[in-house]
Length: 200
Length: 189
Image: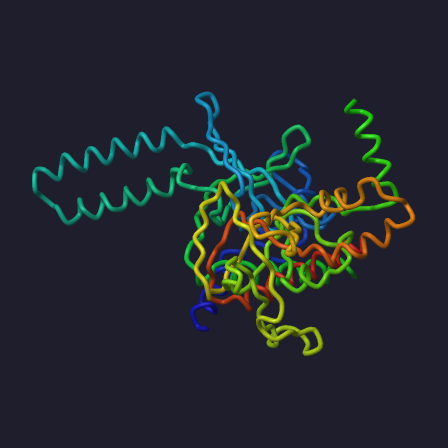
């Protein structure tokens, strides 16, 4: 039980930006259900509003399942996925980050060469591990159909169609589902608060 | 030719409102699907259900309901394993089935006929079942026929994805809370 409490605290801390009370402030990292992302509108390219213009925000957090995946063409810089969180289905765009991945590859090669000199091997091994981890986080090609993902991003309105543009993401694995439970609790709290204030 | 067929079909379906196809995986309880006897009100489309995966005595996998005494009032609560929902395996998806575990199943609601011969267990969407049964039948008997559909057909789920989970009841509780929140708000709009 203490584990999930801890996660709750983490989520609240992460989403604390949204709870600051001043009314006209644009919130960050707002947890939203896709059905509400679908109905949000943009007051400027980076500022959005939801719940009939009651809430203003810049960035959102969603948790959803991948139900479709389109591999990008050479000219297209984005992966396109279909995500579904049991309330709606929306497209999700994640940039390929090819340049970053190439840069990372270059750094990895450098580390590899320095390792052969056999000096500071501890640090270099640690660095290599870090780089491998970063590469794993960067490359969206490992997101597969059926995975559940957390996405931090913003709504993407293009020609009247709403989607989600992901800045960063993580795959939610394991069968204990503590992260999903924590996120859902956060959503429930946040929505109760909104609906309470909107009734007044 | 095709136009004429379409007209026929429309005429046959006249006065019968099927629910719109649901493109997202709406969260439902096993009980909601199994105990719905009016197939015109049965959820039409994709769904997510949480239950216990069991092998039926006839060899096919079923999803049993879970005892939710901790989250639901006693009157709405069934003992574990009272009702079950047959699962059909999608041919394209290679799904591994582990019996006796709690799982979250994503899929599509279908109907099947348990009385048909064993090698002819085919699943079809509620819409196709209704259309098949109502083909070339009088308007007068149509209503009775729909009511009798639940004698021949049973709801089932075509699996798209199975995830094994530990805390099934907690997850159901969160899903239901979110459904309550969102549907309440829709009504007030």
